[in-house]
Length: 124
Image 1: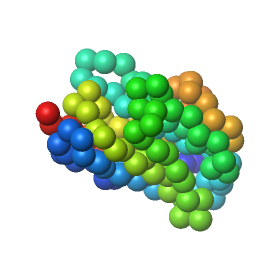
Image 2: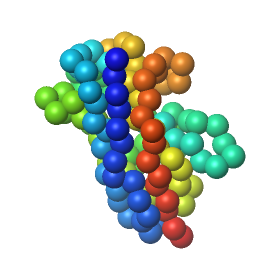
Image 3: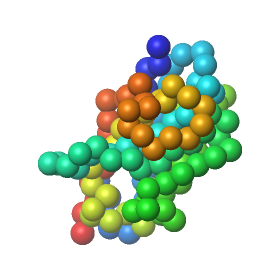
């Protein structure tokens, strides 16, 4: 079992930055690819970024490429999402998730463990 707890959300002005963190429990953190997803009101949950179990491979949604960066510290069992140049359309609840595989994946169905989410609001 993996338990995930996100933190770091909040209210920020357009153009600002936030860093989300996701702390995981469980002994095998490095065997899970990790991902960040987001869900805006009235919309489906969408992929944002993913990182392999070793941290050597990352992948991003086109909408955040060049602005967001995913990273992980396996010693601390934590994954991060650095969000820069934030836009109002980035406003959403952001979820951390663990996939039951080491390699990166965009597929929401590949993720078996989810955090409770953290709200990010970007004002214009």
